[in-house]
Image (cartoon, rainbow, N blue to C red; front, top):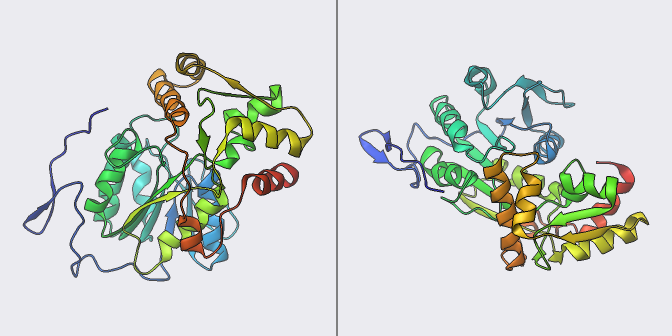
Length: 312
């Protein structure tokens, strides 16, 4: 996937390209410590957790979603990536952003970058983007937004979590397949992934939104141990008392299976990520959660037991 060509943005008389960091000037002064965060995707897996953790820390939150859903302690605001007429009201009174890309869109930059430029013009000083460990700056999907972020904001971070543990316990296709058929379908083979708890992602998001100074880098987030999907199936069997099996598919089988419910291009990208897992791309752990939150990341057994016995 090629990166869209864009004209340089400017600050004063000096151009700033998408991959450069903006200079700190009087105009780009830091956000205040008691600022308000606009949390996009506030009803989602990481957005809701980030909003709740910010509120628990005494921070002001505007919870953005298409239905302006209410989260206790947050101000609800209607927001839709595909409706620019919702941008202005959502940005009003905020000085930092937690950005969850539109779900299922293989080209989120097309809607996210115009919003981010409007946010910058409105005085937003800090932005934290949810991306993926599988997508580097300049890569497909959120990779283009990642690449542009330092040129738009002088305070920023890109969260690049591994695959979510909640994929097996929440509303993800894996979780539905487990509940309905006792099956996990992947093209990941015996490749391992250091699955990460969404609570840990949110904790790092809160740090990135509130720390002084801002991270101004990307942060690869993992759980404490790399596990294969066969390992996950065995653990879920033990935790639930119900047989769960990992069914190995080829890349083509996985792509075609996904394409029955999501756009073909996105299906191919996700199946390709499984193929990368099979080749060892996600067989790593990082110390990021421990280093930034002061505590170790949650393990899969702990998280799955919590989610499956207490609800998500």
